[in-house]
Amino acid sequence: MMTVDLALLLAMGVMFAGGIYLVLERSLTRILLGIMLINNGAIMLLFLASGGVGLAPLFVRGRDPHEYADTLPQALILTAIVIGFAVVAFLTAMIYRSWLLVREDEVEVDAEDVKIARMPAWDAEDDAELVEESSEFLDDAA
Image (cartoon, rainbow, N blue to C red; front, side):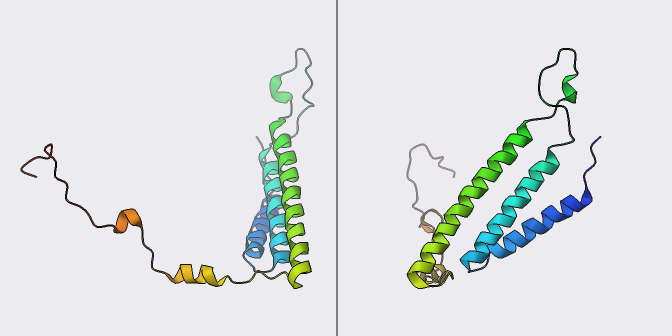
């Protein structure tokens, strides 16, 4: 039976909570830090879900297969590290470009987005007028 360290679970939860809080800010630097925290929280989640330690996954005749370490969580953690690095590199380039152009890393409020958000919602399918169907297959009683 596997025991999970409560301190690691708590640290993972704090990372996710802090990362989500930072991603909701308008500063690109804080968004970058939030993405980094969420990525590290996801890596810790994969680490905690991977289970206990095991033997190296090298085939030895007569050894019980349950004694080997599972390699899937290791591959997922490596993938999460690579994806996180790519996202951090992209956001760093965005922050650098924003700093070169306008000398600030604050995301501005777009006037067109505000106009669209204030418009009443209209759905073509839900709000269209219903046309009465005339078909020979409709029941006369209906």
